Image (cartoon, rainbow, N blue to C red; front, side, top):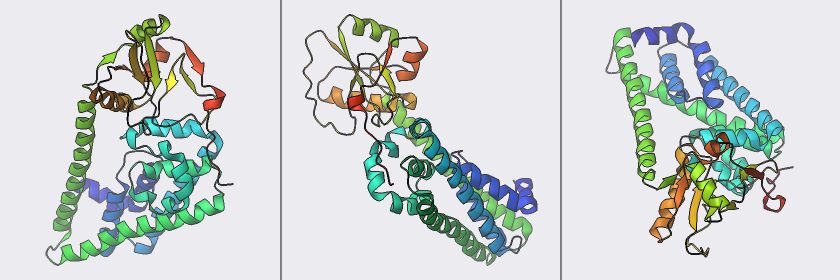
Length: 320
């Protein structure tokens, strides 16, 4: 740990810029911890606080601007990928495009402090044609709060630590404890998501090939329960499937003929949304199964697909 911290002291500005930029681009790196340590190091005289703040601010704004223009260029494609890669896909902001349209400007100010949304907000703003000057103004305020907050916390806590500790080695030990604590918190969050996913695995499943046979024979109804709607006319879905919004239904109203099975699918990692909806339906006495692997495994099996009907495509609301 001491060698790691020694590298931070020696190449701190470069390391901080890289860490902040990577987090902005969606990589799971602890930028907040790096900023906190840098603030503490600045209090010890190792870094210049103004230089370290400018470094972090520049890296984050550069990453956010890149994500903004990628979102503006690729539209729904990038957003869909980021949503699927989210640690908690059920909470993906993409299921509430209208809400983002209404609160997008204010959300940009606080998005940095919300895991998942911090990566999704810039490309969402680009996809929805928010003017870059407007985006940059609000993103700058949010970035300033984020960078300044963690640097200030590290700076102030460093002063408290030095009142009880003396010497470079002792200070390294204190920072090592902080890093270990941050790692424990991160591991705890990962465990929590894993336990939630494990609980959802109790939903009954079916292989795509078996579901396709039942669907072709007219013995099954397949529902697309992706957490977001259809925002791209090029979106593909299982041929013959129907759309079921997992965030809008509370009671099951569909009449299912006797002998017909209900199958659900989504695009989330671990079929998170399908499993959640399946458990809700089972609680209401509706027998159903989750298609294992979702749309991805259905495609890999070479099973039939279709474009979503144009009348079901909803345009993303635009800021301009």
